[in-house]
Picture 1 (cartoon, helix red, strand yellow):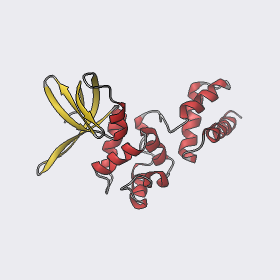
Picture 2 (cartoon, one colour):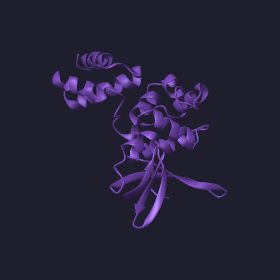
Picture 3 (cartoon, one colour):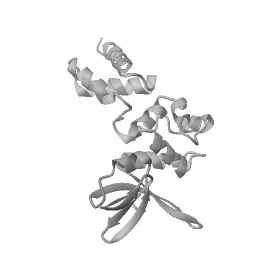
Picture 4 (tube, one colour):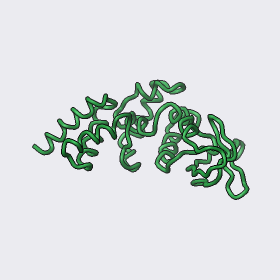
Amino acid sequence: MLYALKGRIFAKDTGWAALDVGGVVYEVTLPLRVALKLPPLGEEATLFTVMVGGGENPVSLFGFLSSDERTLFLKLIRVMGVGPKTALALFSRLEYGEILSAVEGKNGELLSSVPGIGKKTAGRIILELGGKLSSLGALPLAGGFEDALGALTTLGFRRGEGEKALRWVVKEKGNLSLDEMIREALGYLGRVKG
């Protein structure tokens, strides 16, 4: 099984890229968000890959920009009713951190806003993966996480304290506005310190 490919961008489009690795050109299917972040043609890139198929089914390579994204994709396609196309749709519509926060925050509404994912499938994803994604490291989360962290450190909190508070907020409260995230994190920090 291929874990990653490192090579020169040979060709690319919105849903795929061809990577020249030592003279062998691999076609890799990509979520739209990943395809848009690739360097220009001729430059080097690393894609963390998942190979799906075999036997009577054609083999496809799916590519991501980090090993954590790769791992999350693998976990998603193991959920009953979520195949590679559905998981790819999730990664195309939502940022990696948004998927994590939706699962951990039990935000089925956000997951089911992705075409091809109904409420039932969103619920199954949350049920099967909820609480099991902490191995993916710090949640680089949804819009405003870094901004909220910056605000907390400006207020005198250590970065580690701020990250812990914001992870709690995302897990317990789901997606919030920047102001709400900061307010909830301050409340959490007040309870922990007080």
